[in-house]
Length: 123
Image 1 (spheres, rainbow, N blue to C red):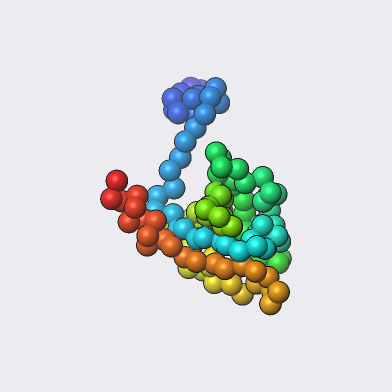
Image 2 (cartoon, rainbow, N blue to C red):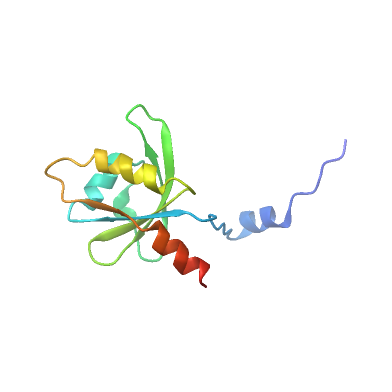
């Protein structure tokens, strides 16, 4: 029995680094004083690890542990975090987040997908 050789990209990822561009992701801006605590309650990763040089992958789950979206978090300007969503999930993810903001939370969710996609498509 013969096996097919693995793609060159597979070996490159094992030996170094790999890069994958999400085709037309959604883009949300989560801002406000309580943004980190809010995201901490909603997702699976330690949000305090968001750094300026790296995207932090995390999973948005429902209360019964269903996967709703996979997010890549980046620090935004000021008191904000930018969240890249899977394609087509920005609006449902923003709606999900907005339903889970407690009345005392200082958090705002803004869907800027149209602005983000215009910027990357114009390049």
